[in-house]
Length: 192
Image 1 (cartoon, rainbow, N blue to C red):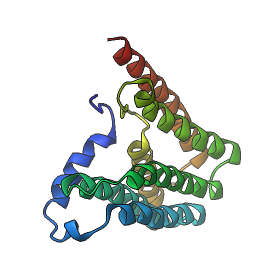
Image 2 (cartoon, rainbow, N blue to C red):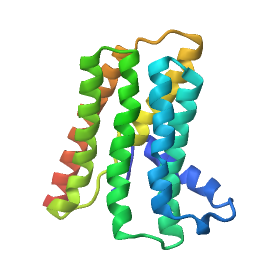
Image 3 (cartoon, rainbow, N blue to C red):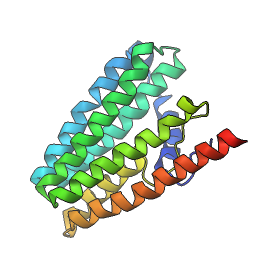
Image 4 (spheres, one colour):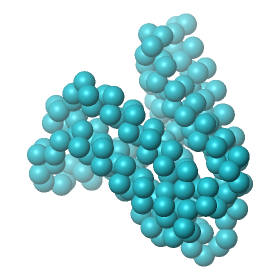
């Protein structure tokens, strides 16, 4: 199913750029997947401390590595059963780490709701295959979308104060919309 209304579509651009980098065939996609935790920690700690440039760099790094692992696995036929698990688990943990960094800036309740909503979005996306359908990637608050929101807000915060609690609320609202879209698309697909 097409991943409309989502930053996820930008992965195609990143993949074209990655195709120009020599030596990627020597990388282990599972190691790259685990390495996603490094920029996630950089982003999370930087958000907590108010180091906006580093937060943006961490979020961008997390996005690039999340594209790189899949690119290597697919392009060089390096998929593994372990990789399927690492891809889901590590990205979930990485997302939580990034959003936990907002505890230094936003109301704890809204940060908790944003983390819970992000998890529900991700689960709603991957439940399609359990029911016999396909994974749903639609936004507007998939993993890449949330990272783009955090990245953009971090860049804005360099020059303009941000109310991070409102940003968490925005993530929650967009996540509810996204989860609803993913479930409804899955149900429609399964009925067809």
